[in-house]
Image (cartoon, rainbow, N blue to C red; front, top):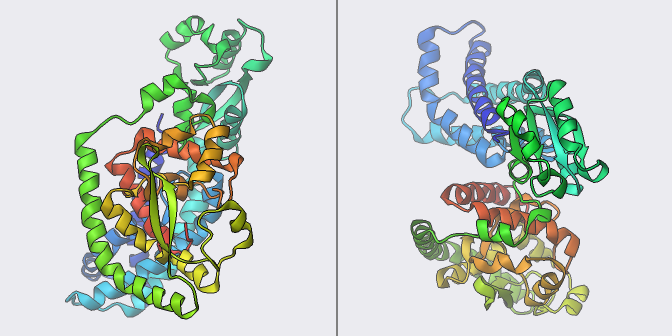
Length: 444
């Protein structure tokens, strides 16, 4: 069920229209009267590269991500940051390209007007339009993940459905589920989201046939959860799921990805060498080794060594006890935020031990803890780990350093989503999000 695809298209078209309208308003303010058609057309044609770049920057800034509660809280700053970046890029475009116009004043007005209009569009107009078109639905199932879905959907008016009832199968008699669903459909519900792995639901699937024939839409809970949160519900992971969803061998994808890794790493090493050498010189001047080597768990559980620029007081060699006594240096904080400390790992990419995109590799001692405590944890090792991954970018509460079983379970749910859905498209999305993280110095 596509919760957000229609909204993404709707937002994109609206954003583009507002960018064009912002230019028209900027021209109007600049000349203090309505611009002629010829004057506006001349400027609009010159701004075409700016409009295209703006939409790309919006994608990178995450303005077309699912409008979850967390994303909505940071949307305002993302819009402002994206439009400042777009204005700077536009200034460069107009400086480099041989254009008839050089709209210095227009750019400032365009920035102010576009930010105000898009903020209004995103925060005040689209939520009200979304509320009008919401369909009524029923959620059937039990457990934390089911409650999580109910709270997210009903607490966020950006989704096109609203649950009028949560039928908790742990609190209802066997044989009564279909009756409750029938009552809900009589009350206007046209979508039923149900957990088909639930024992109570499985016993009544045949009784729901009449509702299917009547045109009621049935959505499997696990798929709905993935579409909503971009991760898999760990409670649904079992051997059946693994057999159905484990990554198949796709020759074109695997070959294309490895080719890009080799080419990208070779070019990247040449470009990054000056940063690596400069950082290494500063680290040596401050005393200590510039590079550290840590063991990591790679594809198929094989251990390899990654190379990084030292950001801590000393090399703890991944020892959990020594990590408690270690701390990040002042220069190390900058290296981590800018991700410069990761640049030497391009060598690991070139060797095939890492990919640009994939689950982040763990230290062997920490991975051993997780394999004991988290079911199916080692399944993340069936593909090559990466410099940047889906869990790394999506899980804002991922554990850092020492083992944390609770938070790693959530991280694993993102890793399994990537394993199931990995493709050139998803890798491109991760690459764009990584660019945003690097530009914002978030140090993911």
